[in-house]
Length: 570
View (cartoon, rainbow, N blue to C red):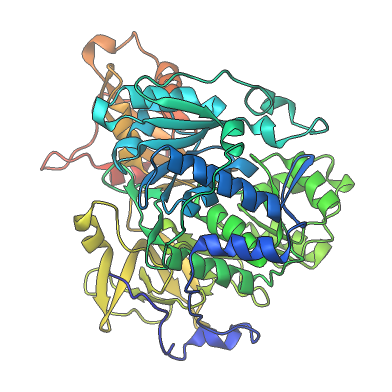
């Protein structure tokens, strides 16, 4: 298992010449739970806007009070210390309230991608043994369908349902395309063998929750990540590992209680959760919440709220700058802009610097590392670069076979250790053991990414050891998509690869062998439509190619790498 504390004495390394002089190289995680951060900010800034959602503001006092009431509701429904509670919503104030309510109830948050469909949601009920969920009304039908198809003892017993419109006022300017799910009230669904409650009833809870007793070493959140084996794995993060990167992110980005941040990266994702929500609440900042990306809404919010900090995916910046209405927006308040998930094109980075004196700071991290394990120093960033090891992180590039450290400029696997590294995979000791390696007498996490280090100590990605597709910052694991596709009755075999996409970076392509009786009766578009009904839209193949047979090795394994290498020519 990784060390519980920051590296005691961080050896002098090349990148320290570029380290921000205002910052320590390592910090000690606070010895309190994450709930304590909200308590402190609510006491310091009770009337200050904590969250902004369209035309509504929620103060820190209100945020704290709502989380207390929802925590009491959860405990009244039988949630006990250590229980896992599903959280399934688009970005909204209720997501933040629910997250802190789960922490307040001494339970563990299971954040789930709201784009998942019923077939995918089954795993998030059964794997963490979740019996309680908090979800948005538009997503409840898929969640309840997933629950109903489980054995009786594995079904949800209580679901708390919220409407996004509960956090909006009459003057909210909602994009037309969002009206059906964002502005519509849905009837409460029925949960056979269980109970469904309305969010407004939970907020009316009168009793106080029980004593909050979590320590830094206790599990607090179980975000899921996929991999080469198909089904997603839960990453066990403690209050300490998340608190470290929340605090470190504030220091890195110069965040204070006067900061105004634009939160548009998904909250279920580790980046939005840690660098957006947790860091903002730790600092007492104002968080302007966007449920999804919309360039015109983003432009209006940055301008009207004088946003100072914006963590994003580079495609968002590209899209905003391409807006025909861009001249109407004022980005002059931005003091920090950065992100990851894909490389920022040099021309776009240069435009930001020329127009606003903003140097886009790219970063890198994984669910297992609580978001950033690397980031570009804001005062000395390099373009198309992961940056340098983040606060308290020691990272190396090693030969993946011999584990010998590679010379400057030579590619190898990126490994890292530090207090933000997760504790292991939920119920997967085999995968946990495989994820760590002993190096220089310490346990390091194996990223599965191939990279190199330049003479200044900055890290660059060169390739992947793991089979993965990066579509606009969303990680797509081919094995998971293939496992879902094999449930289609017409598919005999399928191999999922990445194909180049000028805007998204990569898109998903499926090379499919149909069963004999389906040939001539099922089209490529039929397969694509079925995929959209049964998996998250970013996972669904945009291209399907029918073939007579897939290339296989002598042992019968599908040669996916050969198909991947042939794709650029295709």
